[in-house]
Image 1 (cartoon, rainbow, N blue to C red):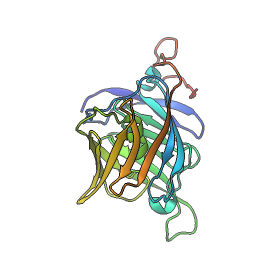
Image 2 (cartoon, rainbow, N blue to C red):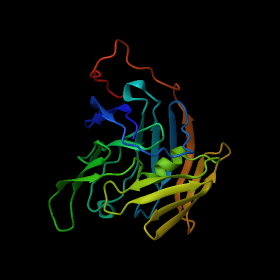
Image 3 (cartoon, one colour):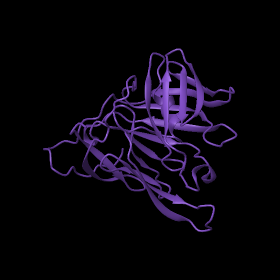
Image 4 (cartoon, one colour):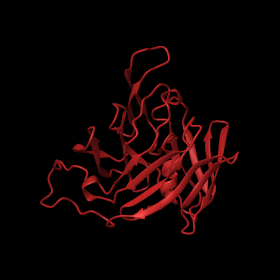
Length: 257
């Protein structure tokens, strides 16, 4: 494991409250991930776990920022799955996801609920705001996943929409059901063919690219549309400099702009 230190953002409900340095737990770097440079917005519709209709979503990918260890924040507005699809977990509709340079999740700030994910010593630590089937009151519980960095099962179609390119080949990474109860999966793609494999079960998805080689549509094996991109927008500079001033052991607070 590389002894490389990165800055991890720990969020409150609306903004970054403080930063800490932790060791990068990733031991495998997925090949073939291509990020769009700068600030990008993606608009479209998606049908996520258990949803019977396509719902609108909006993504804004912020640029690499030295203050955050060259990681990137993905701002999301979407319709999350119902709690019944996530073991009773309640998710809000406007989270912030912190992603590393290879598009793997580092942290999840749900903002509108107490459900969160933070990294800790080579693992994901997840706090879930839940209403289990055998309870009438909401409870909080915590889960720990000791796995290589990867994607969340619910977020996977949206992360694929942002990162897939027509020339990407042989990409694979863990796909963890951070807020639900499904077993660990692997998401992989080779060109337009995408698979989500969980034990002996394999889901097959198909990508239809646009003229720029980005994802335009994602469908399942039955032809059901999982993602449909309606617009891409480049809205800002390619990078953000570090905060001015001399380096300090504890970085100063910096709200998301």
